[in-house]
Length: 490
Image (cartoon, rainbow, N blue to C red):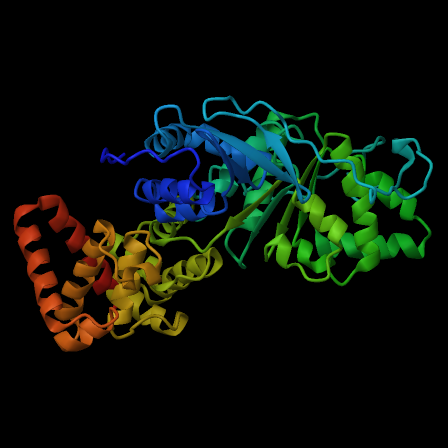
């Protein structure tokens, strides 16, 4: 952390101001995405003496802060409130606040439990002998009930590439697999765009549970299949059998939960199954193409239960992760490819993992059919027909986005008129590259940053050149960005 001195605040000053000063320090000491994920959602709610009370969204959120950022929080609060400064937390539960008077050094040992809920309604039925229940996933040839987990054995944690875009979801998934049903994140809801790896991660959890806990029953089912099963059982007056079967599962994985939105009766049945599993200490894992809060049409009582655990998003993989995904795919297939081709594919396919693998397959197919070595020229020809982003002209906007991504910085922050060192450095490099790779005038380059004049652009370019001459690490950094820009412009 930066060791500059900050005058401690008087105890009676406003808690929001105190936390605001803390955030300014934290922002300079963590990556921007980390700041957005783990610190922006926190709200200050009280300041009594030297004790600042923070409101956090969930028990898991509190535990993650304590495990990963306790030292940073401890140093920050002492800088703002003085040597006696400390933190307490309030954990939000079902729209209520749960007071957890924990200092930043207190171990996260208290498990969050769902509050009593008058909407908790079980469908009326009598319990049957589980071995007399119709099993839609029975394994032929076995006399007793055996559940086929419906998992793809290729979906494992080993071949799920970790990156900034999925680190929280993957970490939570590993915890769930190790201790299903007993962690603070039950249910685990993984959401994100198409082809970003939600199904892979969900099934990886299931496969790992089976490996570590072979006596636990695991079942993966798509929401669409769940709905169709419910309709079939309803026609045959076997709804109770349907419910009983799913209540036998130790780890239930339901994929694409958004498809339940128009199916009101299916939601009623899933509500009963969810309650039974959760109260019995069973693990529930759900995936969705959107955040649960945005599932318009899903019953509020279900949405409230989705918030009991952790909602973790998987975003579009960043450049480094896209490269790692390609290299892992090549390793599994026993393939080799020049690094510059891997980088070219990773830069020009920025949507999702499926299209990334599709581009790789297209290049390999073209190489095999044409009996040619895979090189950058071959990749360019294939990619022109494969993605719209290939063969585009270098523009100032392209450079700005590339530099922002390289420094893990929001695009609009790069354009902000601020004197923060990391922003100024990124802006100077962007201006330098814009002057070198575009035909824009100095005045036009300055206008793309909110109206800087040409003298600022000249000064920025000179600063970059001087630093490249004197700082080898800085020079390597600029050259890496330049190399990536050249690949992207092919």
